[in-house]
Length: 196
Image 1 (spheres, helix red, strand yellow):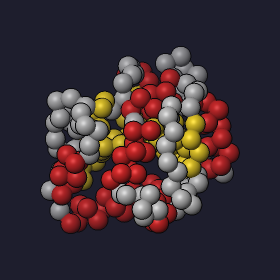
Image 2 (cartoon, rainbow, N blue to C red):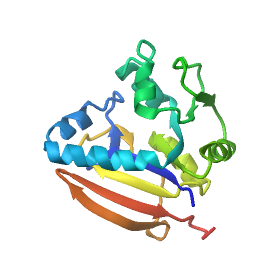
Image 3 (cartoon, rainbow, N blue to C red):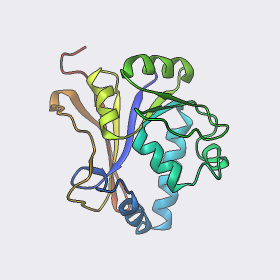
Image 4 (tube, rainbow, N blue to C red):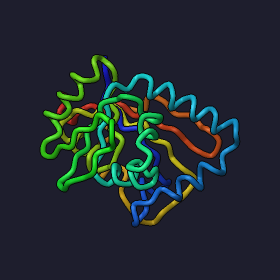
């Protein structure tokens, strides 16, 4: 059965980006990993992404990728990273489209978008790229199946929170944990508090 997965890296104190919405802290942490650990991480992400049939992100995540990778000037990078995976971006403001990329700009309730994504994914998984508030909206609707968390060896003190929601132990089940170099990986399955 297809899953809706929030795969994300976070600092030890629970932030996915710093106060400037930068991920430089994460790249510094990744740079400290051995070549063997980096190769294993890339292989695991490749296996994860091979199961993805659609993905969704918020406006801040989209703008960061757009700017950081200079995708308006080099749209082929989007295709190199994500292929032809249909993507949705939640936004309340106009954003530039990446030439040739299958991206839908949407707003409002996540449920109808989840239905569109599920149809487009044709049995494969859905990836909630970020941010935490968007992932929280999927969790609020009982649509988020898993949180796959890479804990990085860094603390930020403040920034964009991992998941600005309260989820109880009854809603989260640890299904996998392992160490990859200096990172700890935790996978939690979610079930709604009401048991639905």
